[in-house]
Length: 463
Ligand SMILES: *Cc1c(COP(=O)(O)O)cnc(C)c1O
Image 1 (cartoon, protein in one colour):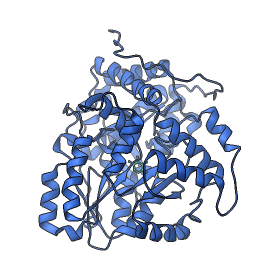
Image 2 (tube, rainbow, N blue to C red; image 1 turned 120 degrees about the horizontal axis):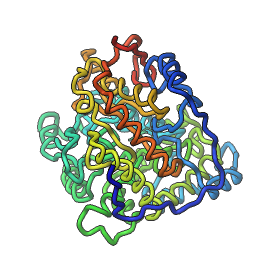
Image 3 (cartoon, rainbow, N blue to C red; image 1 turned 45 degrees about the vertical axis):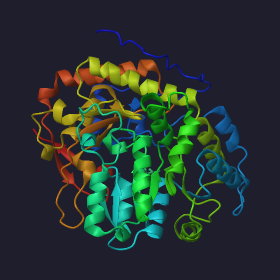
């Protein structure tokens, strides 16, 4: 195998102070564990997993400073000092006026959707996200995808596959009227498209168009620092701007945001909603009391808010984000050299294997991505997850399966957790399964939960 040329050094700007020991398992043990989990990697016990790429959510390694911050928890029920620290950091780094903490991202999505969506409203977005769309629907809205077509093509080399197609938005405005569209929901980077960024040029054009019509923009800012890194590397005029200044510029184009701090912000739990409109804020801080907790803790301990405040500052450091995405690109380039079909360009938080091209003989009804994730675990103890027909679920009205164009296996890289040697093990295991891919026949679903079925569905092997 040819060695990957490293185009720029991405070596980590930290060293390791504490380690977590892992259990090593045999293929026989893993076959048994996978069958017991109904071929759903979400149902495996984490102690049976060697390298856990299920998600980058809440799986980051915190820094010594964040851990020190945990000791400064002010666990007062109301008015915790850690809340005011978090509020100050969000105001300074992202530039929003008001902050409402929540237990995690979906807590913020629930409240924001209830505050802003009326029954029958239309919510355009640059591709759906599972929890985001569900909360929009539960609040009475209907989601419409307005991402550019290239986002649905895993081999398109477009540098900003998270961009919005303004023609698609215009068509929605013509059909439904601007008054039916309370806001456009913009994700940075787009998770379901493979961690693909939106450009600032596109966001500014969207802003100019929506402002004329009185439509707001709400950011799903879960991976905003990662998006900023791609802007710095790819968008003309941003090469000499800091990640921190690009992050602020993105937020400045929007009216508010929901955040899952379990991703970019380097904490194991936490989230918030940030708003500029005082009336929306009043309504949100009222509702948060019903679902999460008082508006100065929103379901979080004081120490969690402190770790989040410190994590946000670390997340917008240029050195941090270069190493974080450098590691993802290192893994992706290895897999490309081995001829594995993956989503290109390589995204910010993981590698997405194209299961349709990996297993062209398995029809989408037999869940190729789900089956591939199960085989990868059995091969090496690497845990990945499905992002295809199982994740897409069913149309709430008709009950029909959604058939997404993208049928992917997601290898999500936790931040600051695994080493370069771990990346090599992952690439070798994928190559190993690729060699015996003809033997993979697919799965049959034998249990389907009503909501977000990918979390708990169970399958059996097709013989
Ligand atoms: C994880 C995630 C969410 C939901 O956040 P949770 O903290 O898991 O509730 C929303 N949007 C995107 C893009 C995400 O990746």
